[in-house]
Image (cartoon, rainbow, N blue to C red; front, side, top):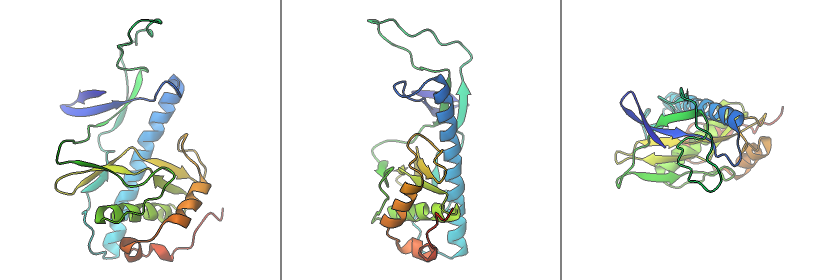
Length: 215
């Protein structure tokens, strides 16, 4: 669903009713917003580390690769939602629950390219430069969080100027509490097994770190 807030276009998001309720919708959306900001925190630290290590050849400068966390918020309807339609009648309601997540609407058009860099269970081993940066970012998150967090299911929109907006992340955490899709330490261990360090991982010294999970 699309909406506007303070003159800006927003995407209005809720959980699917098949696997959620009003209470779980609130929790899941709050967790998603929290994860967006965590992902951006690690993106900022990734570029700070790249600067400290004098990493050359990054195709994306700081602020040109980011998560769509800025401006995102949890909202609640002021008006009471009407009751669900009875069987056999059309359902024309735009919202199912009174709480929603609003994120800035992603750019689109013929010159914009949507790319899937990794899956929820499949680490990315990309070969293009932007994909290699994203893979190194995933590795950096794992190291910077001391093997507590792995950002997964990374996808984004690449603009004509090669800037990238990433969106809708998933995560695997050691305590396995980020979302329904969180597979915890097993998925973190699988990433460490399947990930191939690229030139940016090596420039950041990430391949020198000993795998964790010694909790």
